[in-house]
Length: 320
Image (cartoon, rainbow, N blue to C red; front, side, top):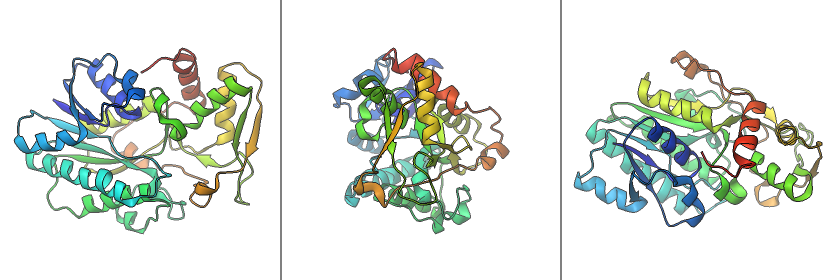
């Protein structure tokens, strides 16, 4: 059976549905008492469910027949500054999952983050020799960075592992995320409520308002990459998960207006002060390492991903 941690969340639930449709037997791990996530799991009632902390205890009993692990679960709030939360959930928990995968010699694919790249001064190459130079901008980023560094220090490893640095992922099943939902989601909601979208102003003289750039990647492409690493097991290591093409927030918001056939109406508001000095103005994943490992499928363009998400999920209030 394949384990998916964070199975009730955004990426985890999409992955779980995709694997289940492929006929895989799954163990879903998460906190299942969050009502806003219930719809993410509809259709997966036949899968085994284990509460997040109970899962660690079950690993000690050797009662589970686990063949591989997707460790997607984590505390992902970039506005949270209580380091102890990340120390427990993102670092300590992940180490225990790693040790189990080592003991059983099963593959482990885990979620790192592009937040490890900080302001991007060191670039966005997934070169393991350069990871120690990176300077994340918040405790969440440091928790992911510290686990990556810890992994690279380990002499004993699972039969295969891939740490995946997710860039800006958007797509269905993020209804529950509130402030942390994608800009696509917020743009759609704001258009419905007010007829327009207000993006963050730039507080960096090198970027005009709306021209802050991110590597946006649709969740369906993320799933394709997750499955590639798990099933192909080309070369253990740490890899980027992005489209390889930075686009502006203005481009993204404009694509939402076009997808719902509304006149473009985009304005700007100040970036909240609590995140202003921790804000990334540019991210763009280098995907050469992944391409060289054999992943050849094309990624959806920003416009293609936004159109699919808006027309087939948001408008219909549908789930993955």
